[in-house]
Length: 123
Image (cartoon, rainbow, N blue to C red):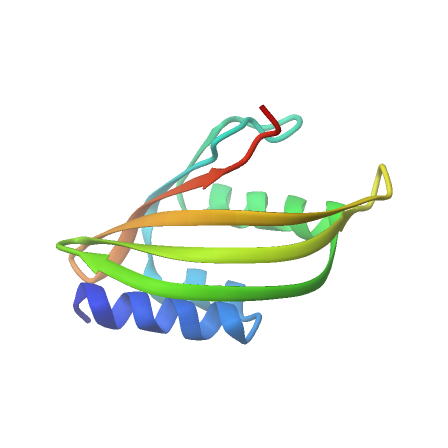
């Protein structure tokens, strides 16, 4: 698949809530995922598919998603961006919030090899 095909498939799977399927089918084994902030007890960078899966499991264990929407994708050469709007409750604190996030993805050899997330960190 080319970059736009991968981007469109990622958006389609995210809209369906099939994040695990997206990881299994679209991501390289050596993918690097970078957060704008350090998740509690984790590194800012997750290296490798298993580490990215672990980060996703942490998210699911600690957040209740009430609604989510996905916008895009917007391609640019071997990269593309996707927008995520999420209404979520942080389970440990009970704090409900609306998140607006952008993911920047890089594709090589038909797989996503890097993702970087950008969001408001309350500054």
